[in-house]
Length: 139
Image 1 (spheres, rainbow, N blue to C red):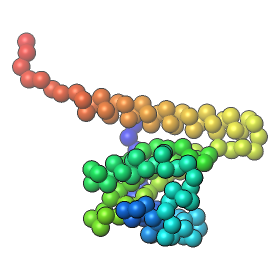
Image 2: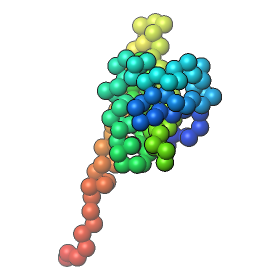
Image 3: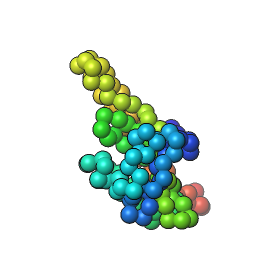
């Protein structure tokens, strides 16, 4: 099952040095005060999780979509490079860990793991499809 992130809000725009240079209205409250700062300095531990995808989008000059867990949240993220060398980031929240009770933590953790497993299975299926080739001829 392939789901495409809607290119609406919230969104953030990064420059080639991963500085926040633009913020959409849906992300203003969280990212607005961070305009001008390097995103990795504001979100410790996120660089190794997100930067490889951002770098790939820049390298191949195409949008890259992925699902990631960070800071108690699972989100589908789309990194889209534009002609100015900027990277537009769109995301769709999928799940959030609820730590109010042990039961709700277990329930939301299981839900988050299922979402991540589903995404990994979809990604594997897609890579197998790309590897398949039709060979003409035969019996």
